[in-house]
Image 1 (spheres, each protein chain N blue to C red):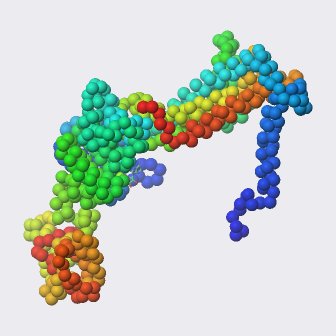
Image 2 (tube, chains in turn brown, blue; image 1 turned 120 degrees about the vertical axis):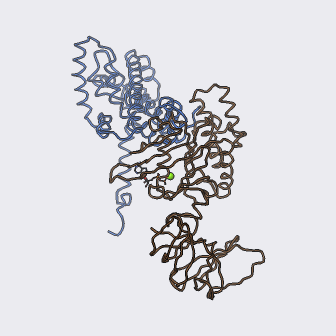
Length: 357
Length: 271
Ligand SMILES: Nc1ncnc2c1ncn2[C@@H]1O[C@H](COP(=O)(O)OP(=O)(O)O)[C@@H](O)[C@H]1O
Ligand SMILES: [Mg+2]
């Protein structure tokens, strides 16, 4: 278990001081696949480096199983890192790279070579053991970096956007591979990414960061279905935002009035929201396209974009703004709508989320 | 003006450039040519011969001076390079400390202070030590050479360190490498080309020095360049040309090696 307690990092270089981490507190459980998700520059790497020991935080504490990590130098922390650029040692072979951490721990020779063998087969690189790291592909380098960091059996593995340099197919493959490694080794993974889809598919829990702060923290479903604020709803997946008036709220449901005048029952992220102006967030796949007569939102179909698996309908709303709907394609799907049609948008009860901020 | 100023388009540029090369290299070519002269003159050609090389080789004073030059250059290069490695590590591998610029300037000071000033200062300083200790060996020359060779050794090492990926050392530290072991296993193997380049440069610079050596040396401590200077004041024979040509050859070999060492980005070293 890692307890990150009120960690603040203020960089003071030339120029004005910059707060890269602003009072970050989060607890990471044992054996969990934990993801730090946020846009570039939000402080993800900084937080990882604080845990690894390459950056001293300005304030705060970091505990690993109750033990204070900040008083230990990087080489005494039972934490290993897979670096963003892999940082493989160019003057060593694949096997020598993997053995490095074990040698530094002065493990017996026999144990070192046994563990290296085990790691090589774990990441399916046994044939490449004698190669120089410059003689293998990007995906293979990635796997060597993983094996090297896993070999000393750290309590925690830190991964800084390890898949961002790989192409699409390889990335999908490595995502599954990482999940497999995590469950096989039982090591806590702290994974950094700016790719929301990657975060949703891989993580047990996700912390969404923005500008040095953790904005929301929870399981992938929580984060996707119940974004706590506009930034999270916007950053994770596609979302339509509508200006609405909050009429009343009770527990986790709320009643809002749309600018078209219709009223809707939606979800509320917390109880007792005060009535007044608010934002309604609706996922494109949660709304349906219909004829205009009964629908709460009406408009004109301005664009149809075919995506293979599904189709996106862009609607210019009569009231104000635009709305995007997504419908999964069926093999026998009729061409039922054309650009320029007057259409309605149907929102089933309870799918929208009202946000106030 | 509409066109940017392009110096190579100006009239007379080619002539000027040609003239510069002639002034630079013609004397050296002549020096080399006349080292093979059969006659006693350094200006009148009398046919080809190895005579002056043989004569220099057999000259006991030349032998002694050569050995002395090499010994001094070896130790000076070794000391200067060791200090340069430490200095380069301190100036690239830690956060900028207070007085960084000052330290940087101090390391490179021998490049800026006029050599004659250093020479006189060392002469006086060493004279004081000589009086105190009575020691008159080669140590003074070795120390003096180490000092002015330091910036030459420092530059390529620092350049190499700056070009090296810091994350490699961090990765090694992340993998339980203590600072000393990280240095030995990660930094040093990659730094070798820079260290060799720095050492060679220091060696050549030491081999070539006249001014400081002339001031610091005790009686009978001539190096090759100061011996040659002494010869020039008496009879000048093509023997001096022959020695110069050999020195030139050594320097050229070292500079070429230096070029290749500092150029190679990834020098695979046995790990
Ligand atoms: N050493 C540093 N000095 C000053 N600012 C820094 C330093 N390191 C990072 N930053 C700043 O802190 C912010 C967060 O950086 P980082 O943690 O690398 O972001 P991320 O990994 O989320 O993209 C960035 O705006 C970056 O410019
Ligand atoms: Mg980053």
